[in-house]
Image (tube, rainbow over all chains, first blue to last red; front, side, top):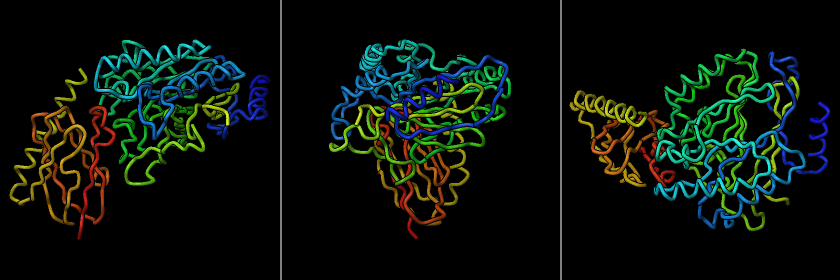
Length: 297
Length: 119
């Protein structure tokens, strides 16, 4: 507990983070039967390695490396790091896809913390049903436990039609069945599981089925990417938090008829880009999110 | 396996759409042919009249495409080599977006169009 408070105070005092957002049900002490401890992890998303577009990011070849350096410079070592998809920008050329994925893997190999989890985005995986991505990064959906929290990575991109699919939903059902109803569950995914902006394709076609499977569990939080901006929404008692991109921001969901990127602002380079640290405390289904810029202002 | 299931589903949907077309042909819907290709719909602007029944006939020579217009709660898969018919009688005036919702390649995210409905 002491370390968590120290870390949070440090972040605030040092002015390292942006807005801090607290998600979950504060004060739910004594959750579950598993051993629970404080921990801290970092989420990066939508790095789009291979993207070319100077009007949106003239440093597309250097932003990922800067993000890696910024994570390495954090004063507190995260327990683990997760990339929630669109590691690379899409290409119709399978060889180029593999080359971009391999380059991405090499660049993030410079992360000091080697406990890194990866997920695909539709740019990585939708054109070949995740084949190239899985060659380099392994299974596209999986679960793991860390300090009393059950983490589930859901792949809603390898199917080009933005479906999780029956097989994975059956796996998810079986995986969740092993958890107590008051277990702390964190879901990582790329697309929003709910209909955030269906007219912009910001949805998962069978995401409602995943949410239905998660609903009986009282302490569920979802972290995702895809929309290139911070966004927070509840579906019932389940909180969903999207992360910023590391290539270019997109405009707010549904704010105009067509989805559009936010152009690069030379006066404020890297504005709207960043990654986040997520901290959770002993015995609480609560996640404190601190947003970090790619480069210090 | 997933791709095979998707193709079967797409074929099934196309069959349903064709059957529905046959049953509705007497309604004399105006037919609007739309080609879905990387990475555009041709035409990308579809002009309709409120209350006028139309059938949108989609084809593609490329890969599996999709048609989705959430405002009218209509969507369909567009497999290569098939004609996919979507029936629509717009009940309101305005401009409504549609897009390809099967990720089809480098320009997929700009593959959109507009249905303009006038009184």
